[in-house]
Length: 217
Image 1 (cartoon, rainbow, N blue to C red):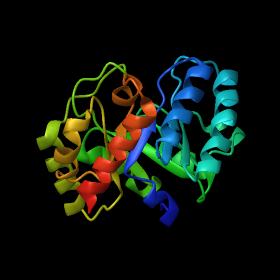
Image 2 (cartoon, one colour):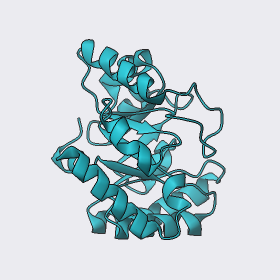
Image 3 (cartoon, rainbow, N blue to C red):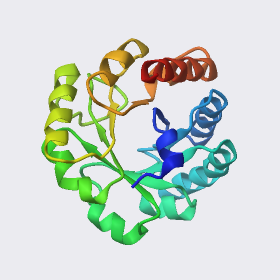
């Protein structure tokens, strides 16, 4: 289970989007300055050595900021960088296997698109990323779009089955969507392109965190 520190960090999750190490590091630096307390390193087209090197550069930055650091897909990179955990896609290592490899003290997140997905992996994960909310260009092989009704129904089904794993909404989300999404049941928001495409990533991050905090009051 996520401990108190990581739960406090949960509102905004930022996901890097570049195969270039320098760009991922700069993105992480910018959002950390803006107050983001959860960074996921995603470098889909990078080789293993580049991913591990980049993870090792970002990990101490997150530690200094008191932020949670997650590596996408790669358990070896998570361990090499002593990251807080790993996020696993539906076609990656199964969370049950990852839990055996990482033990109880690492965070494991899983990608889900349906309530059945969530319920099936809930015993092995600390949170789930559910999406996409709508079409997004930052992810290939997109699952069916959920929309607000999808989040509402998914959350109801999951909670009705006694599963309380935190749910993070992801996929094509803009600032204007945040209040509506959080009102439908998800516990947090994951953003990538909305922040990266902004003129000032640090300022944009601060604005988004303020919006989430005001919603949660």
